[in-house]
Amino acid sequence: MRMGKILLFFAITLRCVLAAPEYKASTQIPIGGEGGWDILTIDDAARRLYLSHATKVIVLDIDTNKVVGEINDTPGVHAFVVAPELQRGFSSNGKENKSSIVDLTTMKTIQKVDVGENPDAIAYDAQRGQVYIFNHSGNSVTVLTGKDGKVQATIPLGGSPEFPAVDSAAGRIYINLEDKSEVAVIDTAKREVTARWPLAPGGEPTGMAFDAAHHRLFATCHNKLMVMLDTDSGKVVGQAPIGSGVDGCAFDEKLQIAFASCGEGVVTVVQEKSPNEMVVVQTLPTQRGARTIALDPKTHRIFLPTADFGPPSSPNGRPSVVPNTMRLLVYGVE
Image (cartoon, rainbow, N blue to C red; front, top):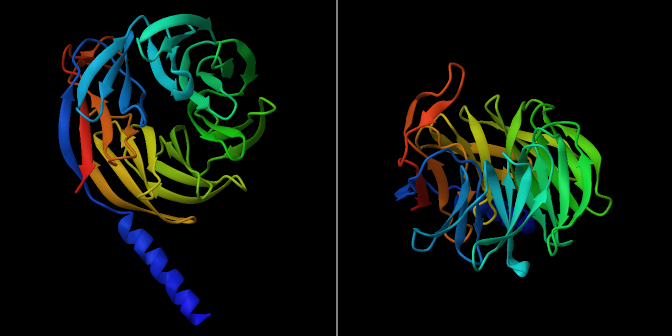
């Protein structure tokens, strides 16, 4: 018994040592163009990154750091998600309340589907072959069949959705409700909300990431906290301080670290020391406006878009984006 405890101690210690590498600036990839950006996603198998950019989606090869194409006619696009086995991609076109269904080989739009008001984040449930398009202003999610784009359901959420996470083993999708400071749990078989989990002490959640192996969900909140939930109980089991202006969140399963990308110009790097303990291991300087993030699980690099900023376009508006200054910041481990 004593030997078993010793081995367990060393296993936990080794996990913690390996889980906290230091991130440093690697390169910057010029994007250019005009307008803002939002969510970016990575297709690890195809080695592609998809970056929403005003009225189009920029496609990059993440092994060469080169732009390889564009998906056009996506007004006010917020996000793009892929269904690799279908060779299809799906966008959320916020300014026209539609989703574009795209051929990933040609990068051409096959069709557009009407969804809810101001579609924002998207999730793909590969187990059921369904696409969940979260309508931020509509307080709902539109469920499409990935193969043919047919609308299967519109699920009311009772709040404004932000980022989701798919839990295939449990048959669930988790979604942050920003204005309710809670997570809504969607049963993918029933296509309905079956639970609501408060995030206190976290408030106004945006980014979300998931540790499937340990049943832990990470939510980044505007009151400068990252909270960790147990998806078996729905209870908050850990918290860590982060920067201000957070939007995105990512989790590296191999390194057991979570990232909070914060618009003030930092990424807070948090180590999951155990399923009930998390600790900040690095505050990584980035650049102002770098608030969304994507993780390459193969190389452990993180990608964050930003640009230079001018004065606000209106008295109470956001700072304007200086044309042709948009870029991807890339950070990696030693």
